Length: 281
Picture (tube, rainbow, N blue to C red):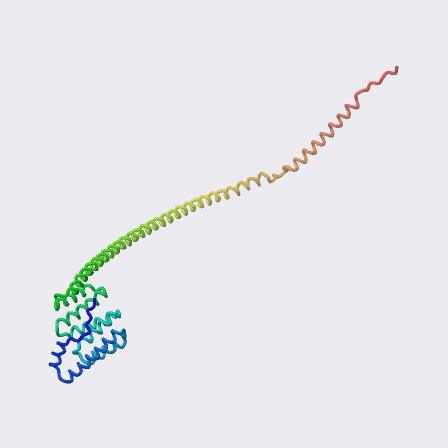
């Protein structure tokens, strides 16, 4: 929770007025007036004009701690946390009393809580308690910041452990994949060597078969001329020897002559047989 502080710290300002010259006193009074106007406009939800007045008040006098502090609260409520933190820090650096420093560091802790910077929030709340140990709200915020820091650290540790485990699993997976790739490559090489060996054996076998085939063909070619010569020698007619066709013709002629002779003989036998005549009764 923010600690709003719209009133000037009269005691501090009075002391500051005693320590400064008339020009600085005048600048401080003008800065104070601008701050009051800004507070009023902010209460009326006129943030833009209020912001402008706060900035004018800050530029008028560096001794006005209320202007940066109140502007920081206005920016915090607009969720402009980074700029709000800068104004709280500015107010804490200018504050000369513990109450002003306490309020500034308390709200700086609130900004760290919004940004989930819990370790920095713990340190800011501790600094606020050093200036006002009796503030229960700051003490409660400190306890909450410590609890959130512990939870954050545990989550971070779990995340680190998970990342480490994931990296280990990924490394093992990559190693397994590499081993599998090596095995596949080795098996592929063996298969290629086996295929080359089989192709070599098949080539040798084909060469041997071709060699044997060429030998058989050559031997057959060597035999064929000899057989052909023998056939031609058997078929070629010798001098003074009838050819098969002539012999066939001669046999047919002889058979024809023999048949004619037989027919003549048969005709004579028929003619020489006496015939019986019938008696004339």
